[in-house]
Amino acid sequence: MEYARAGSRPSWPGGGTRRGGGDRRCQDGKSCSGNNPTSPYSTYYVPRAPGQTVANPNELPDGTSSTFRLREDEAVIYVGKTPPPAKYFGFRSYLFDRFNTTSNQRENIFASLGPTLNPLTIGVDTSGGTGSSPAPFDRPTLVITTGHAQTDRLIRESALAAGISESALNTDVLDPAKVKFGLEDQADSFGFLFRYAIPEDPAKGQAFLDNPGATLLRVTPTTPLTPDPIPAPARPTRGSGTSENSYSAALDALEQAIRNQYSGYDITAIPLATTGEPDPDACIAGTRSCAGDNPDALYPSSGPLRFEAALQPNANTFYVAFGVNHEASGKVLYSNLSVYGVEHLVGVKSVASPEMPGSAQDYLPNDAQANELFAWKIARSCGGAAHCMEVPTGCPGVDTNAFATITFRAYLDPVTKTGPAANELLPERILKISNP
Image 1 (cartoon, rainbow, N blue to C red):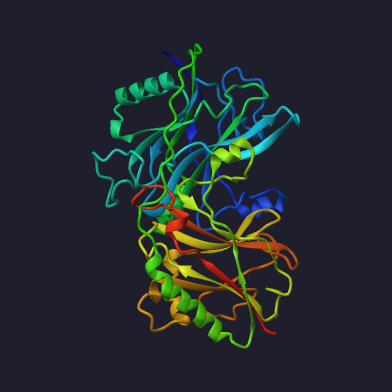
Image 2: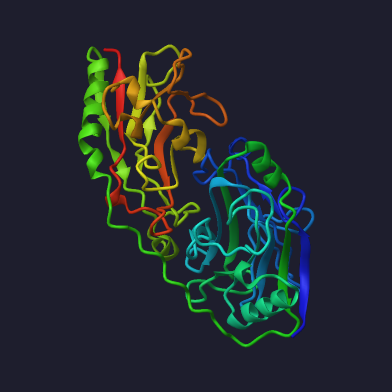
């Protein structure tokens, strides 16, 4: 079977993928879909298929787009390496938008279509050394994004014939039961995100993001193939059977210590509005919003908080977010807390789990478990204080009287190799503290 190659180019900026910046998008008045400030994102920019006449959404002058349509027998292939060592990386495809025949408009879906290929699940070539990086980092890999079984088999056969190790071959399934393939105007469009968080060597990590030395291919059969859908893989089950309940007493003690330190202030507990387990199938069905969910993550969050007297310059009102450092407890590979501007769903600032040790000891210096907890002040001005996040106005930021959320993330249970279960993590807590 011969294949027409619709596009072949290096990946990342200047090539097949580009990084997205939250500050640029909010300046343009667009949504940032709740971007994680800790984790840069990259995406595939894919050309049209041979003979495709309907433009893909938001095409660039070179004809590529980060949202693209696919025939059911097509595939997009990443041929390159995994990144240098880091806390986390992930390859994940998405149903980006869909034509609604009732409203006669395209509607944003942005829901994941299956398990993420992450450091614990991705296949790589381990036969040869590439320096001192341990597998699966900095290793050859090939990711086939398709919903067609024969196409997948033929690509794998070609890869093996080209000398690519079988252990490096991965199939990212576009579930034919959930999507509408095609190149016509009313077909679904797809997208792809690569996430990369907290590299061990920031310079090497940035060099990879700038130029991973990869190739991105759109593969189209010269003669259309008969339907041959790939059975969708089951979504991994969250929950390993172990929890953080042993930290309950220490977390209660930390809350009391914070309240004691600000005993002359008005203190209000801010509830979490969601447990944060994404449900992409519900998003595809139109009953929930996903905004580019990652099955490897948990996203508990406050509801919208109006940053009025709270966090105005020179006002003595602030928040303290605190909880278990889920990385230190061993439940996940990394976690963070972030502040988001609601208007553009833009991630303003974040604090990641490697930065958290010692912060709870500001309030609870003598507790044996305090170093596995965290407590972080969120204010307009920190006055040079440690363990404090300053929230600016402007873009990206939160203007006075605008709404924001305080959101937490927990990435990748090392036992289940997917996102943690909400009922196995102790929920974070937030206090609003105001000078009466």
